[in-house]
Length: 484
Image (tube, rainbow, N blue to C red):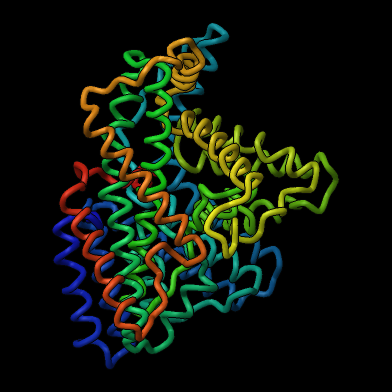
């Protein structure tokens, strides 16, 4: 079920009414309703894969219970690795089986040995990368004794399958989200109103920005040989705003929807395109995944505690694994490697934590130095997105080589220049709105005020956004991160 669908527009208010007006007096009943709603939400796509979520839930719940009573170090390790192997085994099979098989065959063919093996027609379960990491966080934290294992199977099932963030995050930690299922929740109007604002902004990002940009990004990337260098640059820029509007839009809708039900999810994006260096970008982009890899991979590997070579090794590992997490294609590995190369000079010179504040805090405009730093970082990011979006490494290099040709100085050419111009204007307006809202949790997170004038202005802004969604909304597209 898509957030930007009629199905969800009907589903959400029904669940909301049942949650607050029918099951509100019984916490277990509320949690059970969330489980049923979440399984319906996921099963709407393909009910067969509900068995994977259920199996993962039972495995990690059972292992968590055993970890709670087992004190033998070796047995605890066996239990932990059982959880890791089961979860990553399913993830590896569905997501990477054909990739490894194809590359295994290609490697032997390179040395003159022919191997006959058939790839499988495997459907990738939506959200498997997200809920796999979420359940793993539970087992690992219980193993490290950071979290008491739960005895409430319904609460744990709701935690694993919670529908707002089930298929594309944020990837919640058990230490943060699971305890929220234990506590009685009361309706909070201000929290719900803030959630509705965040849902509205998320829908604008997805429907107006991402879906419009997708039409041109897809057209250009899928037919890149037919376009000149300047048009290819615009294609990369359209994809840059497509993936941000698409993914951060999903996160906004997920976080806002959770607030309607009395839950707080972690922030997943913090205006990343206003970053002044790549290190800051990665503190602001897909925060739930970046911090997951930091806590469960980077730090266990030694983090930044060792010598220079260990830091370099760990940095490359975390970026390459992060790239590979996104998909079974060498393009994602190249994207991760490129970001590691970007990050390296900051790490070696110990400048990777220079920008921990908001750019131009309390000011309307950045300084010349800040503006240059943002544009340079943005340029590096756009360049890296080419590898992320390309169909293959060869496609990425041919795309880039055409950009750096004489055709770069020709005028861009589109089949529909009018629509491209309108989309460009919408993106520019969006960037301005994000810039002036960068000190808030999200651009529409206005502070409550008793002023009649401010209240009217806010309502006008909401009406303009709703109008824009209906008038300028692009052709409906699936969320990009559903494929990851």
